Image 1 (cartoon, rainbow over the protein chains, first blue to last red):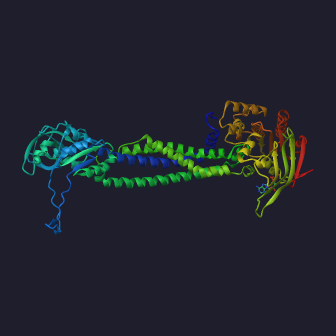
Image 2 (image 1 turned 180 degrees about the vertical axis):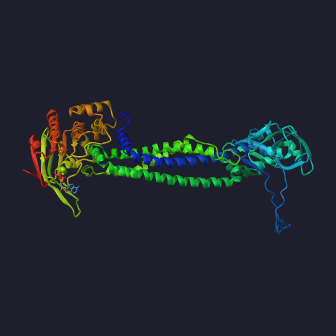
Length: 408
Length: 227
Ligand SMILES: Nc1ncnc2c1ncn2[C@@H]1O[C@H](COP(=O)(O)OP(=O)(O)O)[C@@H](O)[C@H]1O
Ligand SMILES: [Mg+2]
């Protein structure tokens, strides 16, 4: 008998040990349930983390744009509307008004980590006979690389971006037959042309993006696109990515800009995650319920099997409360031990699935995230479930009439 | 303090009260048991001996009448106090279902002390071993209850009943399932404890030979004590 184990625990452990097969089967059942929950939760967390990581490192969390240009109905001198039919005006590419002032304001906000002015436009990249229409981003490398970690995606060359340099996607390089150190002709719709040197190639993990992406210095882009001193967007990174939308709304309210957070632009993703989480919760609930019913069923049978023992214990001075606890402890122990095996099973399945399930290009489908908190949380939940499930059988055991039990 | 450990006044017991099957099993029992007395309770099967013992052992309540243990009126006590009294003042030896099978002989003897203290200790273990030696089973301390003969199990049960040093031991046909030799050994064991430590005994038995060796014999017939 273990010196450190109180009476109730000693009884509970012995009863469970003596009911060998019952105990093994119910622990098996709990393990499977817990395993499923651990597997599902970890995979979902992995997929989410994958996305969040992309948000954190390869796109700004808030973008400030020029507000949509709205047309107003034509009015006469008396203020009456002369022509109510209003056409949406074609959206000219224009610079954000007084952007250095806005940038300074943004930099002053404590929630904001990095601010970078950017100019976006379409140009033609030409090399020899090959030409491709590409998306040109003119950036200030110092601030921009804090928001989009371009250097992390470089597969060849170095993250250099002087006014004579250009960083291009790997697929674009292939299409143009260009490599690091080669010269590219970049031509704007207005006819402006610059010859730039490829300083590095980047792989952003998506083929069509890699076919069209290219970065140049802000000034280079401004002169190519004919917007000297102008920019089209201000990219922002915030400390708490989930506060992005709220911050964006505040910015928009205070400035003549449109502020789009990653939460707004990825609404679809959030809906999908939400739906998945709802399903996950539902599955958890039902797995938890079936585990609870399993534990309760086993303990109800155990109470009947042990009724003589309970009667003897009561006759020798054991209180109702002690009997109650003996069975509560059994429920809690079953849940806890089951959760340990289940967590191990879930983790094993996850490692296996992670190594087997691959995307078409062989990269991982989801990152392997096995957080300790998930295991602690699951074990806690299983233990509490066991305790709750043991409630009814334990009350029944405590209420057992010792006379009836002993008379048998 | 009264000199008697136990006093029953006009105790009645009916089963299935309020149902059509209501039957009164005990009809006005008056009984006294002195400190250190060894009393035999005899009577035909179904006469109400076990019912009486369960009431005295506080496992069951009388329908009417008064029960005093060590002068204390039981009707005035709550569940906690009754449980305490069961643990500290009374020891039980049953005819069947003697021991808890998941435990060894020593652990079975430790059980009442463990339930009382909450934790096992060297002291409790030593007392269990002492009691087992007293019933001549020191060699079987580590045996699981199931691996012992009926006589051995019953001796362990006696040791367990004595664990809390009770004032009163209630034994319901403890020798009913044993051969003559084992029955004699178990009886002598109880008689010995009675003589040495002055523990009172209330022994239900069918064995007239054993009953005659007690201090007093009381016969229960049809729920009444026959004078
Ligand atoms: N729980 C019960 N419900 C109804 N009748 C009972 C119950 N327990 C005992 N009896 C009846 O009470 C009578 C006395 O039983 P019992 O005290 O066991 O007698 P004894 O121990 O002398 O053989 C018997 O007729 C028995 O059928
Ligand atoms: Mg009987």
